[in-house]
Image (cartoon, rainbow, N blue to C red):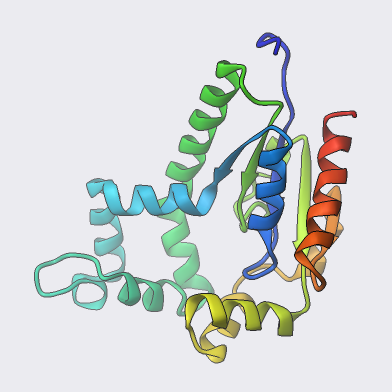
Length: 206
């Protein structure tokens, strides 16, 4: 590959349980470097002591930590997804660092010359206001019932808790109307893979 040629950088977005990982896997097969914002965010949260201290100051040691002062995942999730303001508070700490890390990983991946394009898998593309950074945005949507079934099976979380988290994200119509491609994922995995493959070919001009 000509490393001097700019390669496309796209976003894979959609709410919880819509199937972003299926599209990401298909893009990887098409030659993309996949960068998962959720993975990056978790890596930063659990490895960066400065970020941990900021979060503890923001939410309170008694609220999110054990008796040794270590953040407890489930306590943090409950505190951070309490309401829109709580989500905003944790995102204000994590998002700037996540954005910087994604940009770093994107640049490093492009420089290797190994990839045909870069795909960032992230649920909060529009919420974090970074949509303009991508050449194309691919949105995956699914009916709420289907999403809940997938999430309850995957995460073992109650329906009420999942609905609360889903309702704190932008609604699907908002995201879909502002995306370049929309994939409906109420059917089979094969159908989603086929549509993702078609979009990958379009991105690459094949």
